[in-house]
Amino acid sequence: MSQDKTWSGRFNEPVSELVKKYTGSIDFDQRLAKWDIQGSLAHAQMLTQAGVLSSEDLLAIRQGMAEILAEIEAGKIEWSLDLEDVHMNIERRLTDKIGDAGKRLHTGRSRNDQVATDIRLWLRDQISDIQNLIQNLQAALVELAEKNAAVVMPGFTHLQVAQPVSFGHHMLAYVEMLGRDFERMADCRKRVNRMPLGAAALAGTTYPIQRETTAELLGFEQICQNSLDAVSDRDFAIEFTAAAGLLMIHLSRLSEELILWMSPRFGFIDIADRFCTGSSIMPQKKNPDVPELVRGKAGRVIGHLSGLLLLMKSQPLAYNKDNQEDKEPLFDTVDTLIDTLRIYADMMRGVTVKPENMRAAVMQGFATATDLADYLVKKGMPFRDSHEVVAQAVRHAEQNGADLSDLPLEVLQGFSSLVAEDVYEVLTPEGSLNARNHLGGTAPEQVLKQVARWKEILAA
Image 1: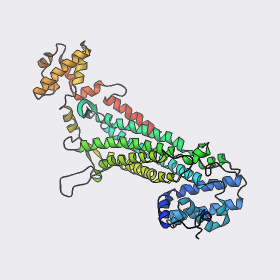
Image 2: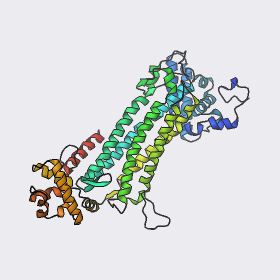
Image 3: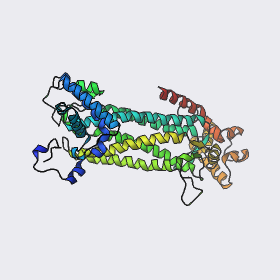
Image 4: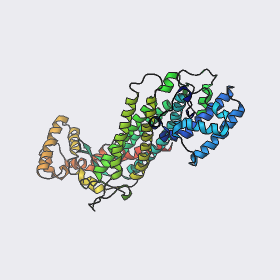
């Protein structure tokens, strides 16, 4: 009988080939190799300091692991399905190289706390990369906002023209969303950065381990305080995927707007050709494939979140084989997020804004009606009365195919004697923008203040 399995002495027959393929994880968890080696080296050093391993064993382990890491980076290692996962593949390769010292490495730990540690080490690094990519996208949006701080576009509610806003102000709305996404990632990282190693299979170990030493060596901020919890829960992965889902929802919303704005019916922007494709039958087409695919991939990440929640919902303590299913959705979520953030920042730097079309759209929807109502209130009319007066003026303008700003003074005065010549200052889109000159408002002056604020944040 084959002795490839570390536990094979308990069984009377070998595992079937079908079961090997079904239960093996080496095809996807080999990406954890670097972090598995990192965790093993820290574990070996701790065991040596605790007097469990000899200094000669530690030296051999370090030399063997260095050789294995070089083989992995060179693509020269052969991963074996018979050894199930990345942990056993590396351990067997180490034992082949250095003999009994390699067999002693697993003292005081289990694959249960080992894999939980590897995933946290890996995810911790990925979150740091994702945070950098979020800020790179924010920087691209801030650049676009600064260039277009005074560009007028229609702001929508119910997808109907509501009030004029600055295009720069609109871009900064997404910068704020991404800022919260960054904060969620930072907060999630704190809970990811807790060390399960030392929990062993589920109850801890009888060896005199020094978990504080291992945590310090691996850069963990905290140590998981309960061995059962340490090996069995994957809430940190669920929390990360939830944060990733929110981030993808924000990018999906922006994608939807880019798709609409690029349509000839809007014509607000153009996206650089390198982010678009054509049609196999319609030669005139220029399709915004990247934002469309981002919109689709948001559903993919949200699906992974649902899958991870369902994975955990009925598991008793402690570790169960179910948890092997945490890796593929988590890996794919990270890959999707990193690829999306990277391409999105590049794409936003390739957006061309069409101010004339945006302003023309503002003029089609009576976007300054609220400004006229506010004008009358400032002249002494109660707001509810001014609301009714302006509604009548809009109806008249609509019947005559005109904008409010096109109506002659005497016509506007027919709706209220409070109207004077200065009314036209509030009826232009630019006047509407400038009137909202307060913190959080859409006035170009405020947009530029927010641009400066975000530049300072992103440079910190």
